[in-house]
Length: 156
Image 1 (tube, rainbow, N blue to C red):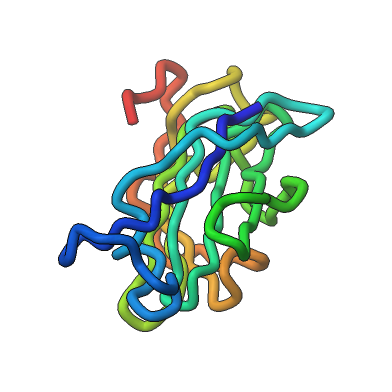
Image 2 (cartoon, rainbow, N blue to C red):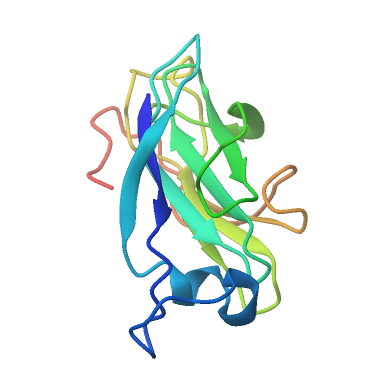
């Protein structure tokens, strides 16, 4: 499970409380976070989540897992509540992912493009980049940064 929370709603530029997150965007208002609860999944641990904020305030968090795929959870209320994590179409060998929102609004992720079922658990090989036009529901791999299947893996 992962600790989740809510932003304290202090605007970075003004150092005062935001009247509305929508006015300044989630990223501007999420200067700091407070503990709020946990996100759990009944079949795996959720660790090293990569959270992104969209201009409308929606938050998406993508998780490293032990079940062979990246899991996705969504918050539409500033992180107070999160959806039950659901598997994406991206494999995951129990390695961290990194996500960002691109200037065109698409979500991009850097990930190891295989499941732990294919190789030794946690091996870091086959580094790839995928994009999603629908905030992480469906992904398309657009670049393969490393294609070697070295048994020892790498540290990323």
